[in-house]
Image (tube, rainbow, N blue to C red; front, side, top):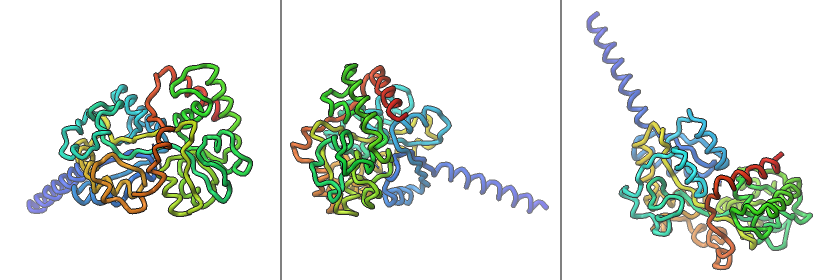
Length: 344
Ligand code: N2P
């Protein structure tokens, strides 16, 4: 009897410690869909004996709303540059001090003193790119380097267009297309932006986050979308080509941050440090096909990325782009109103 009791106690203790080990060994990542290299995650899991769970989102706004609401259980999130200041201001992020981590030396100087997180006290680079135009050349043989493709679509593209469901990216292109500056609060111009979007939207087929496979499969003939995904589409179907809107387009960088209410802070820090390793950063890029901000990762990148025109714009193409930063909250509110009405 005594022995049985002892065994039961030992068994319970074993269960408890196994439970605790499991809880220690988790990391919950909340990231853009189809953006995280499974191979890189496997490598991280094996190295640190951590079980990683990934939950997808499809826009900065949806990610922010979900975390604001609380009870999410995520440790890590990957907001864009124009959203990081909002996350910080709202007290949602942990000041994890990645700038003091071992691999921080690998972050390209260009991405250290960034406006949205000076000196990188909260975030580390994940991937960066831009929002531009994808076109199927066999359907449309004109110039793809213009936002007219989705704002004043030519007849052959009407009803076959997908637009990324990212308010700021769409507002950015429409404002620039109509001759305005990003973050403008010029009422007259914004009225034109509203009307232009309202007029264009019925000519779109979808506002779908998952567009690259459908673009490759000819389900969409044109998109306003992110460059890396269009590189992925072109590698599947050579009819896909990418354009840099001459009227102006936004650059983005998505960065990894730890949530203030994360349960697995140490694992999240290990993850931050891990992705600043050039070989691991290259795994991220090889999967999602965007540039990253880590020095020395190029040599681990697939050949098809190294000379891809989608992610290596010429000087002239770069000149038409601008790094998109957050607008003042009151301007953002105006844009949200316009957007909400356009989506009706
Ligand atoms: C594409 C994800 C791009 C994220 N699947 C843009 N910030």
